[in-house]
Amino acid sequence: MARILVIEDEAPIRANLLRFIRLEGHEGMGAANGQQGLQAALDSPPALILCDIMMSPLNGMDVLAALQRHPALQHIPFIFLSASAEPERLEEALRSGARGYVTKPFNFAQLRTVLQQYVPAVSAT
Image (cartoon, rainbow, N blue to C red; front, side, top):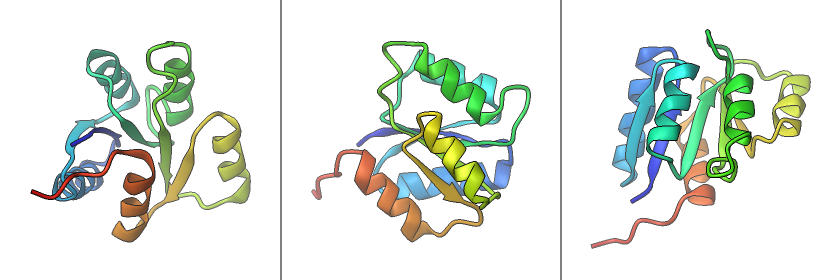
């Protein structure tokens, strides 16, 4: 079981993501904004971070930049979530150090692929 941090300011989206993560056999942690997400990552480093881009007071780019300044956290795979599907936004996200980008509305097959790519498999018992 891997710990996955979801930083998303829209409560229904955050709740759905956390529910999906738990159904996939992982531990989900939620944060309602970038500041809370950054603190959660510092307090209990996750195996993966899913983070909205458009938030305040810290947006997703700010969160990623702050994490990259911490040697113990800079290795954590970081995937952006955003309603914007503009190619320029995707390129900017990847240049900033994100491992990927999932557009909203997303489907659970996309998210399952992200989980399979970046977190250890859950053994069947």
